[in-house]
Length: 149
Image 1 (cartoon, rainbow, N blue to C red):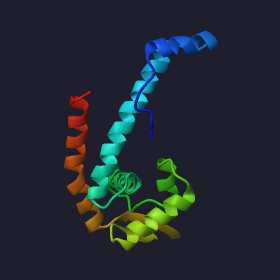
Image 2 (cartoon, rainbow, N blue to C red):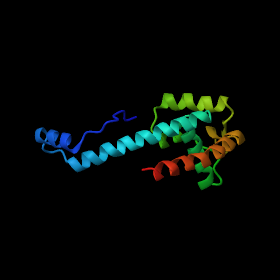
Image 3 (tube, rainbow, N blue to C red):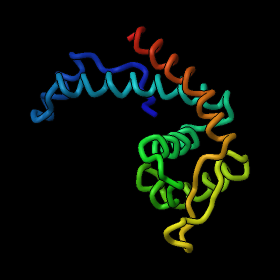
Image 4 (cartoon, helix red, strand yellow):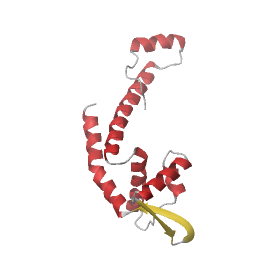
């Protein structure tokens, strides 16, 4: 999250530029506004996900698995390491989150038909239903947020 509510004025940025001449005022100003906007959107999304008993990470895991099935109809799922490789989280966090999603019945694990030792993770029916119940409101929230920018 970007916690700065009151962004520096151009005058403030110009004062900093006097001490740090390599600073590009326009780029810094643009970046600060992007960070603030993204932070506001993330806060709204966090609240939305929480109302559906999800977090951003839990949602993203469901999306990654759903997308894999959509793009590769023959996919039996993904290994935990493959899911982790598509998201920017540590392995321990990924492991705990996957376990939690399985306990909640949103994911299931099974063997890989081409490698009996591999354990593939896929959406359960309940997981796919939860994801597809959340998506319309997710897209509506983003659309509404962007209309107000």
